[in-house]
Image (cartoon, rainbow, N blue to C red; front, top):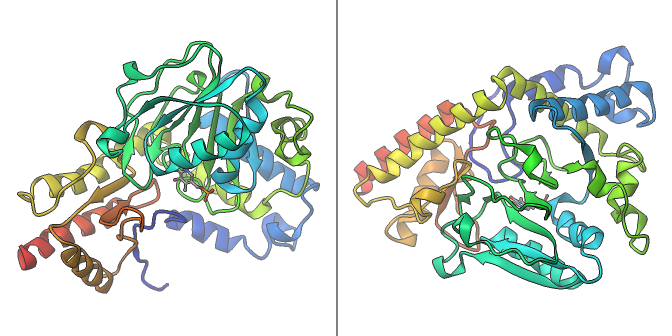
Length: 362
Ligand SMILES: *Cc1c(COP(=O)(O)O)cnc(C)c1O
């Protein structure tokens, strides 16, 4: 096998090597059918087994919360930005959002196309380098829901705890930190995530929602954009992204093998600690723009003294086999995305490279 890159891509991102190898072994002849999983009917027994397995495995990893359903949709998390207000923002209600950066902004913009929106809290004054204090979140009485972005992939800030929204459904875009740590699903009305960061390949968007919330959708919206269509058809109303769902199931198995969410969290914390310690111990050579209490353990953002030096860092890192360390084009700087599947060894190699780079350029 060829050498694997030190992959810090933001998304699509690293997948566990074990998962890739297992998928490879089953690629051509899946479970003795003489077909790839991609070549068979989504209405057949073999695919349906995989589909149902992925759903139940996800719920099981989340502690089998009562009254929740899993959906596998398409169109990415970006389509959810619109589907959420289309399904829930009914007459007389307002859609309430916590504004924490680039992804929250996109979600808000879509909701504005559908109806009245409200900003429950914002970290704009802080240049989105922190998560607002939970006690500063103001939810209007007629809120259809409160929407949060659990991890801002671009800015590198992450909720450490979630707000208690009482009777107002809490909706979270967890695209870049789902299953990175244990959390209480019962706090949420609906959670969504594009798979390509922490769950599998791109092409499937995973929804975990309270059944009663998605049982009925307004009839004036297109069939495919109603949660009820997918909820009532076990996400098999139309052709699902079958290969992506299969891969998600394999990634979920791998998470179980890592000691489930507790095991994954511990590994994630160790990985992030390595890199943040390198930043904090560099005497200012590296700086972390995110406020310490809001730092993401999935997307570590950092800067050097000049853009020139950052360019040099990227150039030298690429020569050493590192991939994806350039910050998002909208904010610049550097970013290491260290999702579940990024091995500790890659993070150790990065920390070592950072120290070496400081020695030669500091
Ligand atoms: C990547 C990402 C998205 C966009 O996901 P798509 O599947 O590309 O639509 C949305 N929100 C967050 C937090 C993300 O990290």
